[in-house]
Amino acid sequence: MTQSAALSPPLAAQPERAKASGLLLAVILLGQFLAVLNVNIVNVATPTIEADLHSSGAGLQMIVAGYTIVYAVLLITGARVGDLFGYRRAFLYGLALFTLTTLGSGLAPSTGALIAFRLAQGAGAAMMMPQVLTLIQRNYQGPARGRALGLWSAVVSGGIVVGQALGGILLGLGAGWRIVFLVMVPIGALLLVAGVRALPADQGGGRGGLDPWGLLTLSAAVLLFVVPLMLGRELHWPLWGWISMALSVVMFGVFVRVERWVTGRGGRPLVDARVLRAPGMRPGLGVLLLGPATWGAFLFTSALHLQGELHLSPFASGMMMVPCAVAFAAVGLLWPRLPAGLQRPLVPFGYVVAAPAYVGLGLAAGGGALYAVMSALIGAGLGVQIAVTNLATEQVDDAYAADASGALLTVMQLGQVIGVSTVGTLFISLSQAHSGSSASVGTAIAMAVLAVLAGVCSLFLARRRKISTT
Image (tube, rainbow, N blue to C red; front, side, top):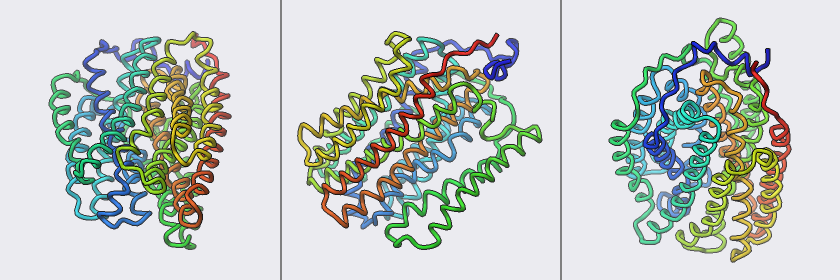
């Protein structure tokens, strides 16, 4: 029996596929749009937040990445909640929490309060967003799934464009950084009303429970690694930070053993080994860790460089990101339309384009047309990430859709956190020790190396061939 066949339950046990709805897709993608907008609109506002709240560099990194850390750690649990209690219910409750904490972020009186609300925002997003990919996977197959994922990619990049541009416009009007959060509150409220009417009812009733021990050990492993990276520079890299990062490796090992223990007891682990054995999942996870690491680092450092070193206005800074986001969206939309024989080779080719473009971006640190061209090439190269998602999940059965989407989204978000915390720390350190151009070149090389590693992983994914389940 093949690995893919091992994942598939008997035909009679497979859930009845709900009729795919354009309205359903619109509602869940708008929710996705809000979550992405929330990340990128904050990137543009970081210099203003720093000035108003007197935030430290570590504080800024936590404001940006704290949301993503919680989002990443809770994504698989959020996917499991949808599987157990219903995707509609999980999406709507997550959206409600996200909207309320967005209001709290806009009213936060201090850096600490803003970080706390951002962490809670991440919990809401983690409840809401896994349902998007799960619903797409359960309701669309073949070319239809490719088109739906292409739209998902366009929404992601659209959130980048709107986040950068809208944040710049609002800040340029003198509205202050708080408006970048408050503007999302009425959108979230309207989407919540629409979702109650549009999302189909489902019963949930998935297998197993929530695996709290797996969640606890994974959370500890992630926090032990990320927190010292964010605080280390300002605290002059204390001994406890290095011990913490070493312990994170131990905790990842503990997490693996806990998952095996849960499986041995007949429970449902946070990460099911049968999902990881599906063809394409493991190389896909590698690509989706390294590729988004470059993306998160690029967005974070670009806002600081353009507004700090180049003294661009928030609006001009946002506009500089438009070519990148448009190219990202275009590749995501065009990929499903390519002949089948070209779709797999396109994945490693994307990173072949992105890696030298990062180096070119560092050399074009002064801005201008060359900077915009390099930015567009980066967007075009990383646009293949949507292809990675599709290829990684094409062999995963519907019964494990929540596990697969949760694992992929978790790794993508952890990749962004790693990019912000490592390359972001490198950029801030080089900016303080050397000229702005040296910082840009140094971080560009780091991002290029990550892109090369992502490309190497993608070679294994591109060579995969669909395996018969008969």
